Length: 118
Image (cartoon, rainbow, N blue to C red):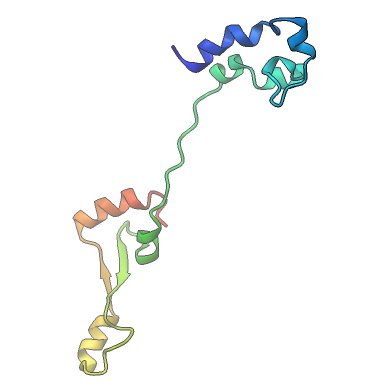
């Protein structure tokens, strides 16, 4: 039994007694709210509302390292180019400056991690 189905009889009925209706409480019950508010947040409206698509979260670690390109692939920069590379040859440093592209197995994972092609 869903939460709304359990709450529907309680929401339709008023307060149990006159003392309960007049006694101030820290948390007012649903029945003490105005008719407009009660109508706008009624369980019937919640049941008839069309379900929306759930927003997917982007994996921030992947988004900082990978960039989606137009052909559906992903590219990243290679490591080892920033510092501690004075002993490397210029040819090796040039190779490290070229982008690296995702392999097919990585592409499948990256599509899940970055659903909006971040």
